[in-house]
Amino acid sequence: MTTSALRGSGLALLLVAVGFGLWSASSDAADHAEAPGTQADAAADINDLYSWHTADGTAVTVITFGGVANPGAPVYDPDVIYTINSDTDGDNEPDGKVTFRFGMGEGGAWGIQTTMGNALGSLTFEGPVGEVVTDATTGAKVWAGVADDPFFFDLQGFIDTLANTGDATDAADIAFTTTDALAGANTTAIVFEGPAPGATWQVWAISGRDNG
Image (cartoon, rainbow, N blue to C red; front, side, top):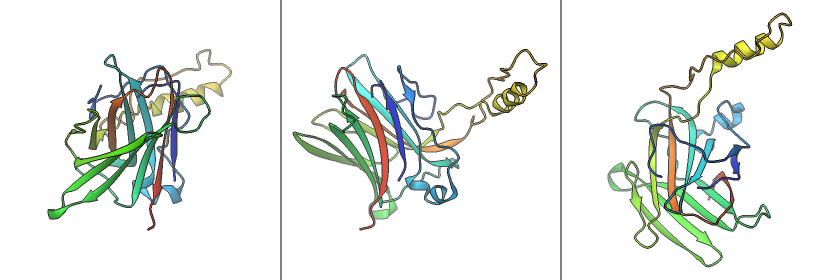
């Protein structure tokens, strides 16, 4: 199981396949180079979590997973369950959950099932991947598929900066090149937009494998 978390963040679909933004958020985890055991289960390996609120009172959360994928090659596994947890009272316990699960229908087409739940109950809606699926009751939306990896990392700048910090004669330690080492890389993403859970909240995501 892997976990990714954001604090002080909220949940504008759909900026999938371009860049994702962050609203006042600090990330506790970003996983792009996992241990071999975790990499071996790509479908359950969460890369990153992005979350923000919109001017319309909704909240958006994006989960990326499966490492770097080839174009048109998403990572789906019917036995992996992804959960977005939200805490609205600061006790670090989930007050609301949204879970996602993939399944293959007739003809080999993949779909995604979304379940929204809180203390008052839950509701489930589903539809095909690669399309925006909307719940008629709440207006919540979900999209899943291959997307341009939104994570920005200046690898060469990072390496050069490390080298500079070890050189006492170099007055400028920072040597970022502003070049994204992940430009053009794809990943599998789930994008969920629904009613904001509160004025302020924490959100984190977990993945788990259902072994039946």
